Image (tube, rainbow, N blue to C red; front, side, top):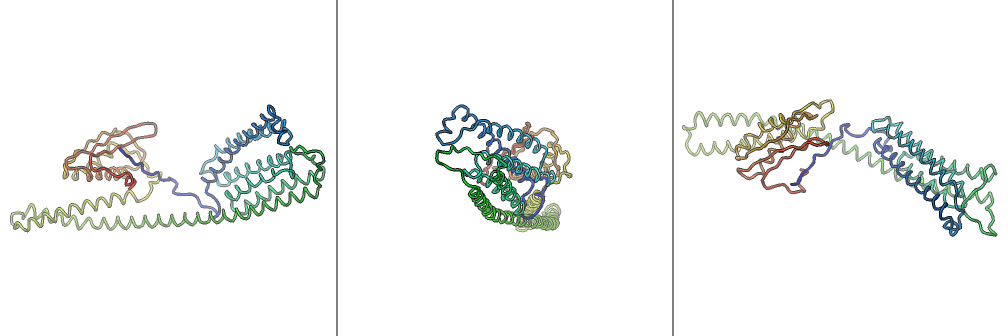
Length: 407
């Protein structure tokens, strides 16, 4: 038996709006967690480097590298402590936390990472290797996560840290370092060459920042436009549903008048009517009954589509009472098609709006009756587990195609 789970509706009714280029808090929070997961991987790389250096130093020698001794473990340990702190701080944040707290946490992670990366760049070789291009990782991510001005600040911070490292090395304030095993006859690069290499790298960083930030900004603006268009469509759909409900309610009065007149003819003047008129009245009665059911169905579906239930509207609803009310609504329809109804649900209390649940289950029962074979049966059962209450409406009719279940 196939089943379809009703989609959940956010109880907060959408995201909080900020600058058109700024991400929502839920996305920023997910990105902050993603940073910590990547950092675990980096910690593992440092630990693996330390292990290889300890037990297989010849691998580094063959690659013309100086086997690292202590610094991989120092980096792994410091990043481990930092990541534990970040995770503990993140657990105190949620989508409802102030925006500045979530944004500040990401800035804290980026700032610590850039400082650690600058130390790593110095140890490995600021201009002797391509390690400096690892700054591009944070620059690209900043372009994706932040508006353009903020991503520019990250780029400027990375450039300042890297250039300061190179200047300290060139001026002699910081002893030069590196992991490349220099061969005989290889001379150290001059100060001018080191500055030229570092400035060229920084120039490439700003080109990358400009391109990625421009593309990311355009994508964020388009996302905002799509979100705004979607909100307008939802508002229009709710208005259409409201008008439909008002119009449908207005139709109930004329149909009630027609049915009252039919009952007057049937029970007061039926014998006085010729046979042809009786057949005509019977047809009008059948058509009126069908149209009345259609009107009730439209009203029912309109109430279901009328929008999410606010948290303040929730109340305790007895599932057994809900089905008692739903049975009253579909009793005539079941009797007309000779459908037997078997309801076996517990009297469990649910946190929801009772009227909404009655409308929902009335609609499900009505559909089960409509698509059952004449003289069939509809069975309703329920199961309770840790996730909640699961209600099953089962009929023995023509069935529903799997692709039609969501409708």
